Image (cartoon, rainbow, N blue to C red; front, top):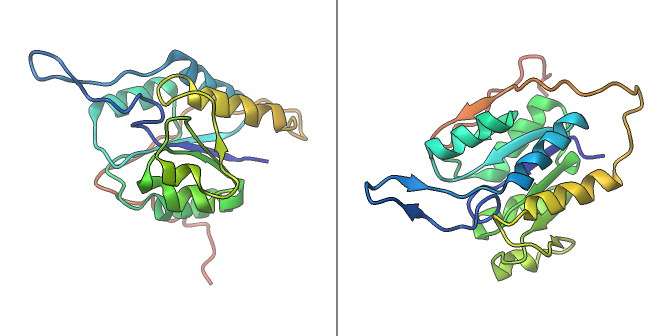
Length: 187
């Protein structure tokens, strides 16, 4: 069962375009259905993460609004970040679902338990063995399509308890990794 759902941002949660207002303000377009999908994950007890190589106050605002558990901005090594996050959460990469769309997502997509990409992802991403190629494009509810497919496959929790809905936001900037959990034994 998936314990962590992680998503790239640009080209996955957005259409990959950069929009600029006359005053130079940068804009990004997000899909409401993707946002609602993150709420469904929280209700199901699945932790959430957004991982992007960009550093943008727009992404921070969106993550806050959605109650994303972990946010990594300016992340240059997405696989290493998720490996550290898994260690902190005491889960394995096999327990992670990830959606990404471009070559900077290749390593992470190849390492996780369940991988998906939008229909308009880079061709190299689409050739990853076992990747789920979604029917929707980035920014057009592709993330929601993936979430819905995961939730259909998941089983209810064995204790019947509803998930904690409070955010536990880990914000990294400039690619910093989350701190190692002090309760995690070292070998």
